[in-house]
Image 1: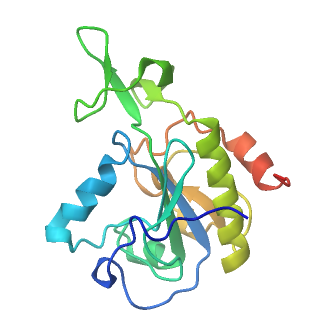
Image 2: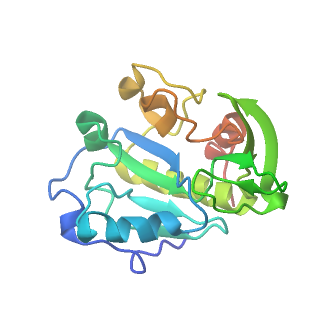
Length: 204
């Protein structure tokens, strides 16, 4: 049984809605920040009262943090119907990267990425991305299995990264980039075929 840390970064009631809603989707996204900097930002956003929290965060070394119970929801996507029916999981990942004049790789906030984690792939006009560690993907698969069983969500992932206007109708696991045009989140290094195979195989 996987360990879910529901204490370290557990948020207050003011950071999510009190009503419980039926879940038909899990939305995977990335932090677009270095390490856990996105959590630090959310803790201070709107004087600590923001409702833009994701339900879970998965660190690069595979640790799973629950910010609030998955039966509730927040304004994570900023799309009411979608937020009501979904559980959001953010993977720590810097996303698209840029090469600086001195050959370093940085994100949009000039945060430095470890060169060993940079992979080149042309997509949406970007060329460099931070890879997803195996332990992070494994924890993502495990968490999705747990949540799908708990909420009776179909164990299947949408098979493309880009925007689609009917994403809200999909039953299963989707990406934030399926909901938002021109979004690169999650990035193309996320292997959908492999993820789907792992999702439907016994990890033990």
